[in-house]
Image (cartoon, rainbow, N blue to C red):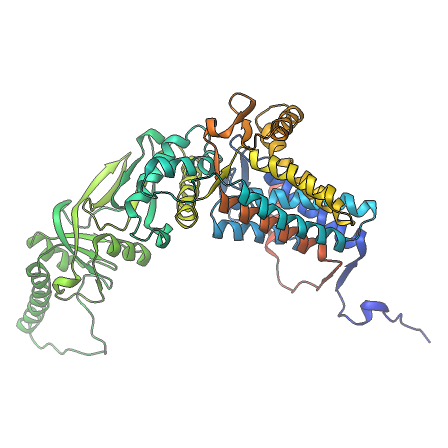
Length: 548
């Protein structure tokens, strides 16, 4: 009689195929190592001299960028602990639109220091307690470091906007930040509503056109559509606009019907009545004062013929989102079917014309007079990947503008804030008595990775830079930061490198929360994966076949 081995422990409770990891070595240290690997990837992209990453996603699309949010989005990270850091970075990107790299790298640094403490014998709960005390102190110190007078700002003053935006844009496009900041500031100020806190990021559009260079880029007050006009009329000035979402064509009946035609005359009359009906509709649109028709669907040949006869320009916008934006630009109301629009539903544009920019035919709808709610940044560049990276820099600038509309406070940049926080936290840790003091001290040390990384990426001696920063801050100069161009420490009020208070605050908060969440995990229980072909396995098999 054979005896089968009965599963014991937690395995007897779970289904077959489950994996169970527990304890410091299996769960906590493994999680920390995964997060450290992720932060190592993004860390070298931190700051103005950050290196680019070349990421090829599962659809074979190439990304060449130093934007951490894009990198972690395209990496398709599987490890559950590393995913927590990715979620923190996404939260930062959605809340502020910048600082995702700081969030991931700082969380990785906190976990690396926590690992040292665990190996020294501290319990994760003691480390978490210390980290929580540290972040409360960080928020307190950060508010003391706010530049006096920055609480209020004129969001329509270009100089004030550019000074707050420069650091965010320079971290993506170092050396070109002046041109980009000027373009983004103009575009944002144009569409800023009366109440700046209601600023909508979607109102600043980006049109990427190959050819030329960044110096050929410009701002259009209105929309740029990458399509040609449908008919032969290519230009209209000071025109009223009628928008039809359902298309400009003869409409089919709702119910199915059969028409019996007995003779050629009847057939001819049937065709004539259809023609007359289309002409009647187009004539009604023309009599309402509209000189431009924008269609969300197909444009029929017969309808186009009558539009040409009545000197009406016809545009086709297939995307319903673009159609909504066009309605916002022109102030029009979209009709579902072709019919006579009421005067209130008509929009207005100063000019609408078809132009050729760098071999690409585009339709530009301009609204120079006030009341315009859409502005477009036309970017020019030599390759698609350069244009994509420029677009990310513009997006960061626009998001920074939105953040400063809500909270305009600024703190010193160029690692000045981080070193000051590290110094104040170390003093705070020395005053503590419990085991928390070791965790708070390690939290303070974690801030040193910012000046170290900035110096390393710029090819400077990190230890010298950190030492001179500590010396300067110890003598009371809280605004001493790194000047990467000269490779020395300088007062940030001279180099004009300022970071938004909100960006720093949320990045440090999210990083601390993510690190504490990872440290709280002491067991990992993984179910057996569901059946069916896995995409990564299929891709690996395909790659193996290619290699053979």
